[in-house]
Amino acid sequence: MQTRQIDLNADVGESFGARRAGDDESIFRYVTSGNVACGVHAGDPNIIAATIKAALAHKVSVGAHPSYPDAGGFGRTSIEMAPAELENVILYQLGAVGAIARALGARVTHVKPHGALYNDAAKNAAIAAAVARAVGRYDRDLILVGLAGSVSLNAARAESLRTVAEAFCDRAYEADGTLRSRSHAGAVFEDPRSAAAQALEIALRDRVFARNGQSIEVQAQTLCIHGDSPNATEIACAVRDALVAAGVRIVPMTELA
Image (tube, rainbow, N blue to C red; front, top):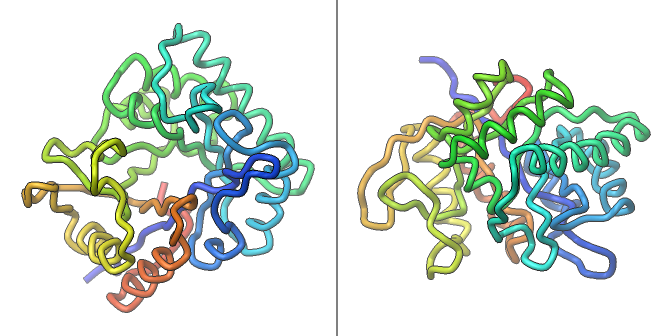
């Protein structure tokens, strides 16, 4: 039987100035890929640099985590934009993280949209195409991360980009395969054991159980742990320990795309 392999990624660098969010140093001990906020929904030049330095120290792959221009809403508000405008907003963010990474001797390996942009790209073909075009215009060697089974991955492949399908071990799913809105109770798992159990279902059985108990097929190569959750480190530790104990090999997404 072939050994299962999966990447563990976390959204990181989401502090801003004196406002602190998450404990990146701790979570980097457990994940293999980090998605660095690009200074639009969160992050600033100094935080981007510090986050990339920490990723390098822990041998964590560096990715960019662009969003809609929505600092007030932490990138969780959908913003209607013309495709060309959206492409420019994404290019601006990739350039920011890419320049700092290059100066520090790091290489950006992947792009994962944040928040509302991620969710919109998962179901709206026009938005997905704009995201994929922006990534391709910036660097065709980048991996584009998208929700498993979504149109965002189709758009990336249409642009001849490498893709990695993502699932979430710390988020609840609806019966249609979408993530439960954060405006509803139970959208985010707070119990590390629940996150670990869902991670095992995804990694070993290619499925999750929706809120209504329905089994949904999910074929994913990377699992996300939200770095801004209050107990993100405990969740990351529980998830990694459970996967390793089950014989799953944890590898960076660069080995999977």
